[in-house]
Image 1 (cartoon, rainbow, N blue to C red):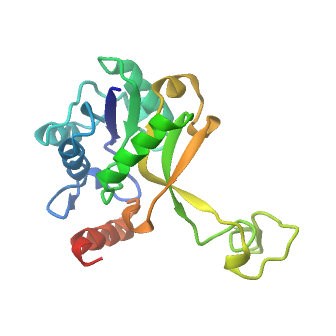
Image 2: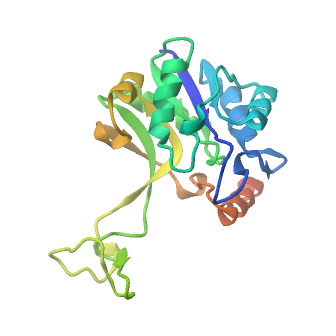
Image 3: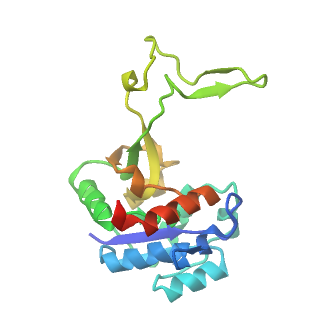
Length: 229
């Protein structure tokens, strides 16, 4: 089955300016995902979708394919990345069987996990396999809303009084580790969770998603201390 890895990296970023090109442990952040993706030999092609010339230049230098430019309207702060996925599938030069999105803001991923996620996708009936991690929070216990006066209330009321986290149902966070999808499902659907989605459980330490400078520093710390874990 033909597998294409897509890395979606726009030029603008409000939480951490220019984060995709910041130096992360010796090379641009996006370069880590490109380099490791190619080195894994899992994919038939590694494609970068971007609106930014600097990102495109870095992508090519590290061996990725940049066969098209992402339209500006798909690279705004409020753009729906699902639409960028649709654009990439429609614009890519060849047909393929498996779409894999690898956000470069998750540089600690292990590609042995990606291989196992692809195997899971192949062997079960689903539209997508995505990474998840256990959460320490539950909407019926320790997740709340706050009104304009500062008064809080549980996000989700439960028939049972829950006084300890251990007594609440297990909850999971969706990660940006990887999205293994059916290209046809993406083209025909409005959003990711509208289909039959399988959650592949991963360790927290490999699932840091870089949104701001604190995430960036934490991810660098973990990357630099991988051998000590």
